[in-house]
Length: 343
Image (cartoon, rainbow, N blue to C red; front, side, top):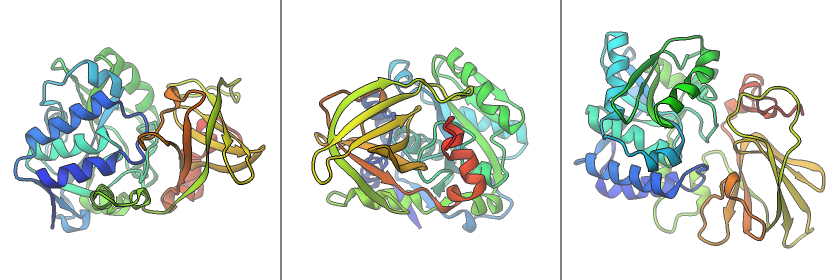
């Protein structure tokens, strides 16, 4: 049985940043210090299939803005309060915590929750990558609802949401804003037998290996990764939009990258909260549900869409999504049409 203790934490945290988008330095450092303070001798990491089949498992994640987390500091009990509120609603105790996704803060906060509750962390997550909406998970694809969902805010608030699965995001976003821009969510309550069926397995162990000094970045990509191009950002443009009303919390934009070698193609990256489509001289070469990332040549960190600037040297990488995302149902939930691009 694997455990994440003080020594493993450094590798786990490093692995969690390799393809993480939207991770602010201040909030990541805060979550890292928070985890270090509560982890004790270590949190056991278990497979969902090792638990009692009927045991309750709960997904824990940061909801809202990482920037807000860095500005409005936590009390420290938010993960535990969120899970306890969900337990009271369900009338049973959680036997394990699982991540929604394992990117930066969203990898560390489930670990914090497991440490506070004294339960294992499941070796897996609900995306195998990162999507912007709470319902964009393999849990949803497996028929598990995010609700009932409990939110714990930094000023002591507790909010319980009960609604249809396709209404969670619409209700969650304004509530999180009213709580100061971030909260910890406990959601997707399910039996271990169901979690074993819908989880993307082994991703906690994967990040522990990928965060080892000297490990290649590709070690953090369970289904493969390829370099699309290396080049310089020429321009960042506001998009004219793609028609239809989008539920995503940011405006579309385009990033133009001039390839520095090879065919010297002009790469257009279409972004909506994250990069969802890459065009090379007008031809589609990568798209959601695969994850498209810009890696800064200086420092090696992921460049967020809202921080991209002309002149930056970047490597554009494509991380292959878990096979379930390439099914008809997966494409409907996490493919281009889910981001308002009718291709």
